[in-house]
Image 1 (cartoon, rainbow, N blue to C red):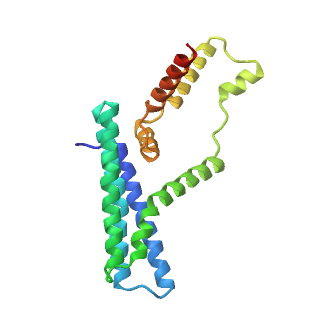
Image 2: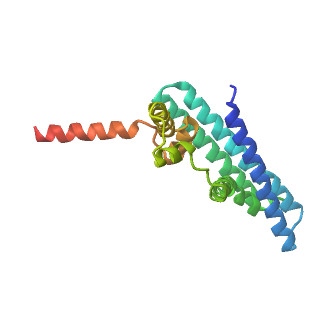
Image 3: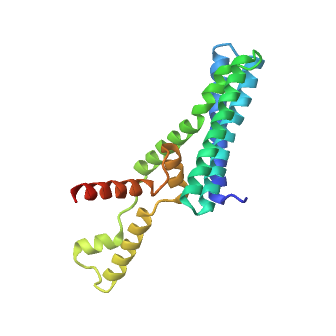
Length: 204
């Protein structure tokens, strides 16, 4: 199975971000003068656990999208979640049981992806605030009353297209969100329809 280039790019960014988190964790142990071989093993295992979990989550979501069926997609996403959870719990239990592996870097690695995504969102917000988009020249022209009437229909059509594109969520992001929440897209609509049928049946 070939992953989408955008998904691979997200995995590369996540790998770099998790590496930065691991370096920060190592620096904390160095400052506390607690860095030893067990910490190094914990950092390596924790890094592989964080990156591997994100990668196999991407694989599971991609396979779910490839099915084209809601029930099959839901089953694949659940099986992927259960398998990854079992592996993560097993690795964390191993780090607690084996003295040569420090448990703290392994447990902390579970939060690496969330930290990386939060940092990226904050950085994007800062960049957008620091460099706001320049005002559109057509907007200035329309405000001054000098807008070309022939250009207005084309501009309105382009705005409608952009609104439609904005309202259409990215498939990968949509499934990531629903993967974390549990239900698959469309399930809520079925539940609402079933509720309406019950209410109508009760009224009759």
